[in-house]
Length: 152
Picture (cartoon, one colour):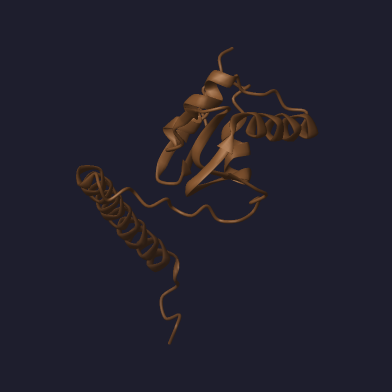
């Protein structure tokens, strides 16, 4: 029997992140232990060690190095190599339970900024419309359930 469950999605730093295979636990680690910080560098080996320790502590499988690299790059951390391999603009820490700050988009690419703002405004308009419809339905339900003469 096939499960009809949808893959879990995460909204993170302005990007929609979807977990893939059950072994793809890196998005959860990233949310609690990595932050975008311009100008910093995080060693790939240091990231790998912290991630594996986190997964071992929770008895979880780990994502493949390819999945980790893809995830990091999708979230704005370019993969670079000098003497060692590292990710740009990433810092490692214990941020569990803290809100994830939205990353500011580079101003050099005005098109990306305009697209992001447009999507955000459109999303907000849709949410407002849905909330107004729900409020109207709730009001109708409340009126239909309120006995005549109550509230006088």
